[in-house]
Amino acid sequence: MFFPAEPPADARSIDWPHGRLTLHRLGAMLAPVVFTAPGQPDFSPMQIAPWHAEPIGAAQVGLMRGLRGDWPCVPFGRTDRPADLPAGWSARPPHDGWGHGYSAHHDWDWLATDDPHTLALTIALPAADPIARLTRTVRAQPDAAVVDLSLCIEARVPCTLPVALHPTLRLDAGRVALDLPAHGPGLSYPVPAEPGRSRLAPDQRFDRLDAVPTTDGPPADLTRFPQPQDSEDLLQLMALGGPVTARYLDCGWALELDWDRALLPDLMLWVSHRGRLYPPWNGRHLALGVEPVCGVFDLGRVAAPPSDHPLSARTGLTLTPGQPLVVRSRFSARPLSAAECQP
Image 1 (cartoon, rainbow, N blue to C red):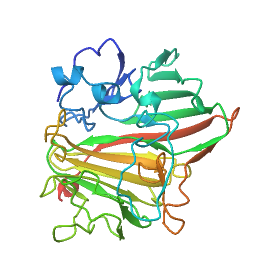
Image 2 (tube, rainbow, N blue to C red; image 1 turned 90 degrees about the vertical axis):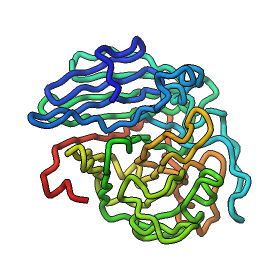
Image 3 (spheres, helix red, strand yellow; image 1 turned 45 degrees about the horizontal axis):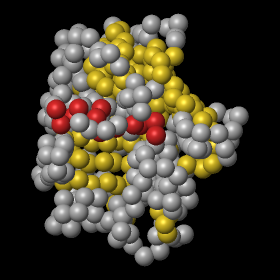
Image 4 (cartoon, rainbow, N blue to C red; image 1 turned 30 degrees about the vertical axis):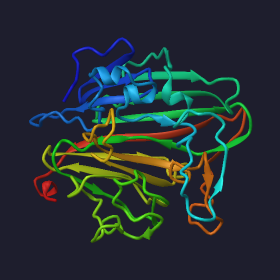
C-alpha cells in the first residue's frame, strides 16, 4: 500500500499510538488512514485511485486528480442528468457544474488547532453558491484506533440541498464482508449506472443486500467482495438502524463506520468493481463507496422522482443562514477474532 514517509506539500498527517492518517487540502480528502495494533499487520482500508502517481493522474482535474478515501459532498451528486430516467422523474437545474460540489474540486485552507491529534480545514465558497463556508475537523482519539470527523455547513441563503459523506473503501486487499444493521427498502439506481457495465436491474426495490435483482441471472450478494463479475453499480439503502462494518477477512481487521443518522438517514453504495473501462479508470478501479446520504441517489441536483417513489421526501438537508449545521461521523478499527475471519 502506497504510504509516503512524509505527506505531500498539500497534506498533513497525524501520528498517534494506534495509527497514522493523512488529510489533503484538495477536497479535504482523508487517506491513507493506517491503523496499527500489537501483533497485527498494519491495516489501510481507504481506497486511493490507482492513477494517483501516474502521469494520467496529474492530468486530471479537481476531484479526479486526488480521488481517495473519504470526503464531504455539499451539495451531493452529479450535475449531468441521465437521458433515460423512468417516466415521472422531473428535471432540476443544478446551480453549478461541480459534481459533488465546488468543495470537492478545490483546495481548502488549514486552520490552526491546539491539539496534536486534530487537523482542521475550511473553504469559502463562491458568492453565487447557497453555501458560504464548510469546515472539516479530523481528530484521532489518542487512546484508541478511532478517527472522529465533523463537517460544519454554513448557509449563505435558506436552502435545501442533498448532502453526503463519501467514505470509499479498497477492495484490493482480499475478501471483504459487509455487515449491515436492519434497514428499510433497498433501491437500485433508476437507470444503468454505467451503460453496458451495470449488473443490477434498474429501478427495482429489494429487501436484502444479499439478494439484489440483476439483469443477467441470480440475485447479487453485495455483502461479499470481490464479486464474481465486474460491474459499476449504484444503490441506496433507506433508514439504516446502526453502524456499518467492513470485515477484511484476509487482513484480520474490521472497520466500522458510524454517523449521525438523524441527518443522513440512508446509505448509498457505489460498487466500482473494475466497471469503468475508459481512462483513467482503465478497468482497474476496485472500491466500495459506503456513503451516508440525505438525498435521492446522486440525482437530487438534477432530477426529482415521482411523488410515490420511496425517496421522494429525501430532498436534502434544510439549511438556514446564521445556524451552522454540524454532521458527525466516525471510523473505528479493531482486529478480528479467528471466528470473525470466516466469510
